[in-house]
Amino acid sequence: MQKTGTATLPLHYGSAPKWLYNRMVKLVEGISGIIIDEYGANGFLKRISDPFWFQSFSCVLGFDWHSSGTTTVTCAALKQALRPELGVLVAGGKGKASRKSLSDIEKYSKIFDLEPEKFMYLSRMTAKIDNTAVQDAHQLYHHSFFLTRNGEWAVVQQGMNPMQRTARRYHWFSENISNLVVEPHTSILGETKIKNVLNMTAKKSEETRKISVDLAKEKPKKIKNMINSVRKPFQKGLEEYVHVDVKKIETLNMPKRINWETMKKVYDFQPRNYEEFLSIKGVGPSTVRALALISDLIYGKKPSWNDPVKYSFTVGGKDGVPYPVNRKVMDKSIEILRQGIEESKIGRNEKIDALKRLRRIVPV
Picture 1: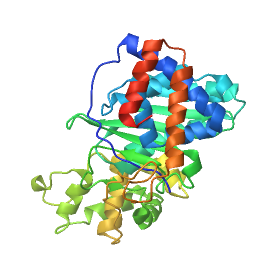
Picture 2: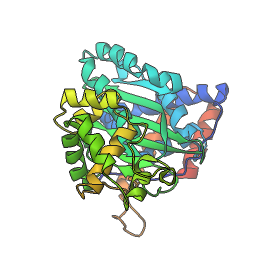
Picture 3: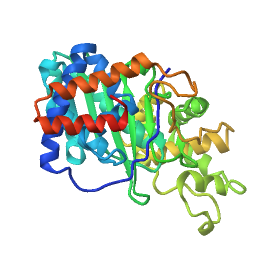
Picture 4: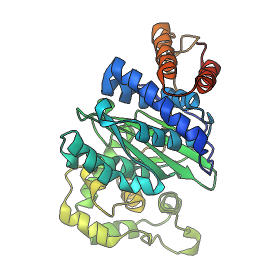
């Protein structure tokens, strides 16, 4: 069963104190080394991609359990602690560091003797999908790309909604993905489900994806005519998709935010599928929404408006839902964290504090 989850992540500003961060890096080094020795680099990525394990890991390191910083600071500590000899490296990070993801990947690929183009493409696409294909009012500001010597990869990225002061974390893991644009996430974590999230990655959106590709291969003038032909009683539908104030206009005009140069570029490219369509530079949320609008209002194929945030359990539930607690797995996970703390290169007092934090999460 794929492990997915939800967590409350209020948006917190500021940085972790240097004294705390330096100790976090040492703890990360110790715990990560134990996991990689025991389960290999791929097993380490599998745990990083598990939202509950990641959250517990952050708590053990000493960060607030419910803060948006559980993502950014933990990933920064991982980037600093992981070394080539461990077989895992982390590209990108928060803000300016996220914009260095591609150069980081290029450098790390050379260290691991891998072709960088594939992983640079995956880095771009995972970010674009969570900003464009999943429109949940959270703009990405953090992107960490994990890469192993064998070419396995994972992504932990986070978006913010400053108006609501919430953050949302997106987990990707190469082992779980068969198609980048069809329910590719290991999990998406957020405070609550949001109404009317355009989710073009949902299986329910399959017909909308197909029609969007077909439309993208039409001349832009034809697409303009299609939207201009949409009149009452569909005004409410247009407002849902493109945020146009329909009360101010007599007819449904093409939204101003559609980039027609981009649409011409898409037409010239003639994408074969939805992934190729999204990969074209300039294709953004408005383009995706406009084509989904035509699919819905003209062709009668509705996309998914269900928020993909999910909730489950890491090792099962005490009442047997969705499945009984796997005590062996749970005990092993606790032991790995405990052993990592014991063997990390930090002082006795710091180890005691870390073990206390672990005990607050689970009985050690």
